[in-house]
Image (tube, rainbow, N blue to C red; front, side, top):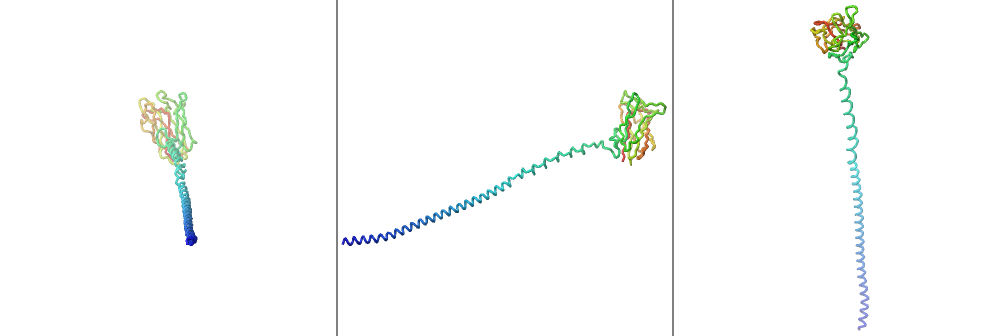
Length: 290
């Protein structure tokens, strides 16, 4: 009986072993499933890793794009627009300010010395308006006065002669008054001065003024001067010329005694009242003419 039971147990053990084997197989299958899950996890990890890589790559690429864009934009922002030659160009430093507009000859030009109309003799020493048409100075040649031609500002200079003459034979022009002043020609009742010139090239004379530089050569009286031309006779006011040194300019209007376009102008100058005697250093004709 015990033998039968032992065999039965052995047989049962053999059968139970098979059942246990099945369970063990199932357990192994579950383990495999678990391993499969592990594999899925790996897949998941791989996917996560890949996705992460993709995300990282994308982020990296996007970041690169962003960085590149930022770099490009930065280049645009930091580009030398501010420091470009537009700001530092020679527009600011160009010689517009330092150009010769302020120092051009418009400001420094000899406006005072500019000729008036067709008369080119420059400003009148006498201070009369207009420009110098003619001026002479008397010089000393050992007591004899002779003319020095200083200016001829007339358009036609073909006739240019000045001299001192007397009413008596053997007249010699005297140079006097060297003790008190510069000295000059003695012009009195026995002498006169002739100026020979031409106004050809002048269309209109709006003003003409005759001036002398000197003084009355009389210690007790002032003097004057008068003139004569082919156009008429004129005179300065009586006692216009002081008898006191130093010398000064004395001017009178002779517009009606000179005409434009005349090729034979003769101006004869003499001393007048009260003294009737002058010391004349210079004679000037000042014109406003066209």
